[in-house]
Image (cartoon, rainbow, N blue to C red; front, side):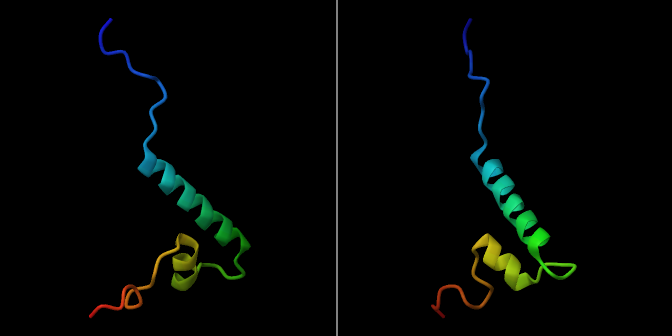
Length: 57
């Protein structure tokens, strides 16, 4: 049989997205308020808010 493939296919982008969603769910469950603030979301996702990234102008 030609072209046999492994049945364990990993989509690395999907795995990262699942991990980030999990981090957001953990943060949301620990949050005091009803919603996460944009700043807290940025912190959880480890991204720089707009206007702060880089420094080149």
